[in-house]
Amino acid sequence: QKEVEQDPGPLSVPEGAIVSLNCTYSNSAFQYFMWYRQYSRKGPELLMYTYSSGNKEDGRFTAQVDKSSKYISLFIRDSQPSDSATYLCAMSAGAGNNRKLIWGLGTSLAVNP
Amino acid sequence: GAVVSQHPSWVICKSGTSVKIECRSLDFQATTMFWYRQFPKQSLMLMATSNEGSKATYEQGVEKDKFLINHASLTLSTLTVTSAHPEDSSFYICSAKDPRARTGELFFGEGSRLTVL
Image (cartoon, rainbow over all chains, first blue to last red):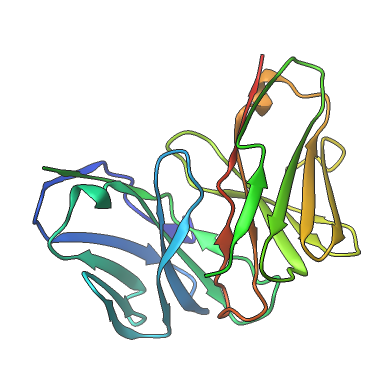
């Protein structure tokens, strides 16, 4: 079993839809949870960052962490064609410069105008 | 946010040649940089952790003699793919940890697409 599971999709939605992206994980030591967005042929960019459990909102994006279920989500409201990208979840345990991020496979999202 | 620059963004080379990719942190000093490899429609695969002034730490299965990493300064790490072969063709991405950033937060370069003929 992989440490982090993420459905690769692809996911195709109409413009304006609410998008739900998810990852599950098996390591209960994970405390730091991130969502990165990667456009085609570009490096990933950090979208959302959450420490421990709870919700975090930033504009049209909401990140949720449920540590009891080992499940994290990213919601995109009023999705736009410019949101079309691959969304990768990443997480790590503890602190420290060399603490490795464990990555999901990434979910490919297409928002159709 | 912090800026990481990677060069070249794409390179085509003949089999058997060596290719060097540079990763620079432009507005911060990065004691640690990471090199990833990404195949089409796949996630990032960590190749090695580059530490300034010391030897890189390679992940299991990554040949250190083939993928040479040098982190000679606090703003520059280089990855050299030696004696490249077509199976080395991939998207190579570096990332760096800004000491001012939150735990786990990384800043990525734009990536370098290597095609070996």
